[in-house]
Length: 441
Image: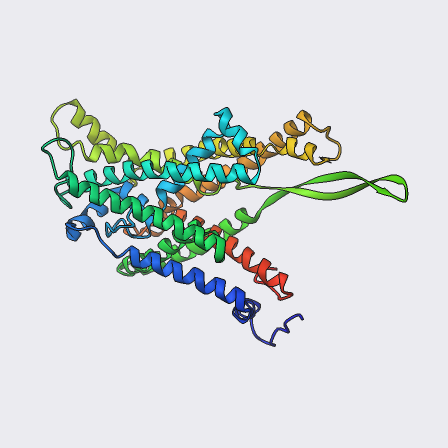
């Protein structure tokens, strides 16, 4: 029976109440919240021998570590057992997506249906381990150079090999445990577990950001920063939900009364303007942060290497305009690259033809593929410019508001809005299955 909405009560609040009235849905929500709480507890368990004051100073001066901390939910800033977060798993997934179109054996596996997807997922899990080992060892070496930790093994007679193995084992185990938590949430909870872990980490960091912002004396700038944040969130919602509907018709034959009849059904193929999500932003910021990070560890030298390092430190600093221009260009390039790779893997025209579907006015096969490619390219122009704008919003906000100490975390907003909308869609589907009104109209 359809739940009657109480007069005067907001629809969103009523939907939330209805979600907790359904026993199995309430259990899924509580299960998800419980596992996210476990993740937050893990983020507070530090590795032994960490100098927290030196670690805080390192994060204040290193952009790359601050970017990686985004995906660990503050666990990297605490150098906890969950310091790597789910970033190695995300990296492994991206690498696998890029390798599938290139390696014929992976292409064959990907076309084997559900069993093929499970095999690909197992490969992603196995690939996560060496990536986590490499990333963990790099971070240990990085923080050792800053005096945060000591005795990291770097060769015979340099450092403690057993202690380094123990720390690496803890970091890799923490990553794989978080991946397991994420998959449990996906299977038995609400929403995409990996995304929700990233979401929870970002939300956990917002109180510190708000405290940092409240320490500013520029009250007008803080107000403008809040207005820009709301406007950016609204823009992200619009572009996240925007898509082009391509009409598709399916024809099938049925046998009735001794005769064959041809039936057709019409539907549409939704292609989103922002099909790449946050992946181009991750690629672009990783590339643009790297030169300045390397230059900061070269040290003060009197030769040409020192001069080059000094130049790179200036040009690849977030306070320099070149940093943001390069970021914008890289985001646009990576958006086109990643979108085309993903759509190439999906083989939309081939799947339509195999299932008896066709775009009205377009011949099946290669003509349909060419038509879809043209549509995707045109839509990607808008998506690429949107992501490029989101990437440079911190610089624009700092110039408008003159609030330098706390830039607008536009990448965090993009992730948060995307995860929130996806989770709300799943809750909406659960409510509608039980004839309740959902969150979204």
